[in-house]
Length: 531
Image (tube, rainbow, N blue to C red):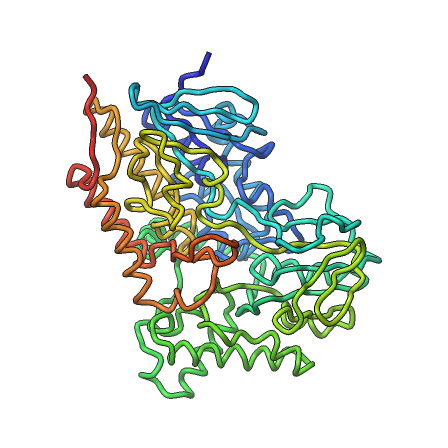
């Protein structure tokens, strides 16, 4: 017999844990399902060498409990994966969340029953559940993908993905290691792997802009200051997402010398704050080029071989249009005698054989392959579940030409199904924890409203959905983001529609829009009442 649940939650990372806690808080019986054997979400799987967050640890944490944020002591400016995972384990234990989580259990299907107005959900063990609400906390960056390389199935050695790293870490000593991909995870892993590999070959398709992290231990007085100021800092973060020093000055309103000094100041500080040196870097191509030129000069200064330096300089897209990367000793790693950069634009991979990777120009003996090839972002985790709404409509089919939803939260024909930090919301463009808390709080208030009014279901209108999709596109068109073939547009997934997915209008504006919709009695939604 199917088990009844008020709210079924998919995932037990940052989003799933807070959703579970919040549902309990409002008196809703909830249960979460997690594919991994423990909590953590993406931070359970991202165990690769060098894995750490590029948002400062004191910000990349929950704000819903002051006791929690006061009692937890972060040790570094940018936390490593083990520390983030330890934090999430602490949260799960502190709030007694594990008793309501099924670990090692994936959800494979969810079908809406038009007659009962309930969701029928099945897990990968064949168990069935009936739920009033489905909360998809499955992660924006959780569906890892291996590269589609001819012959990779014939490779004799181990093949790893940074997003699904084994608990028993591989040994790189005496190994010729290939790293395929130079996005965020590759940029973090490459310097670490290079320290012990016999030889490291980095296969680069597109170079990325890498800002130095300048990571350091958190001094006791620094941590204490943050904790004392948390009320003010958290309130500001709700409006801006991540606390950076946002300039209000256009790049060309200052002299070239002043621009250089500002870029150098932020380069020396480290982190993504560099991108906010001037307020038009992401809207004006000429302004953006001044920032790109600065980074190009730093790459040329860091890398000894001028040919390699030029291969590492991104030149065909604006700085920041692909996710800006934060690294430590990344460019300097290419000065090591045991590191070789393979430029796939000049010499693409043609074949993987039992013990080598073959490019158009050379065959390279390889013992181990590390794929740092990213994720099917924002929609991939949802696409792995057979989700069917009213009349059997498939979510995959509905999103075949690109994701469509209202406020990034709900879709036409999929009543009572909520998406956390998915497409159509600020999501990956802001501090994810801030976005998660905003979404979960809104969902909880919505459920309170539905329960109090005796409603059976809520779903967006087609008009509201279409208007929101257009707004997401309009906001993106005002920026330089669409000028890069990035995973923001799904460009890293063969066959995926190239549609810019996040809402770039800022989380403060987005929060105000969502709050106004709720204040207006959930305008743009159809609410069905019970008999």
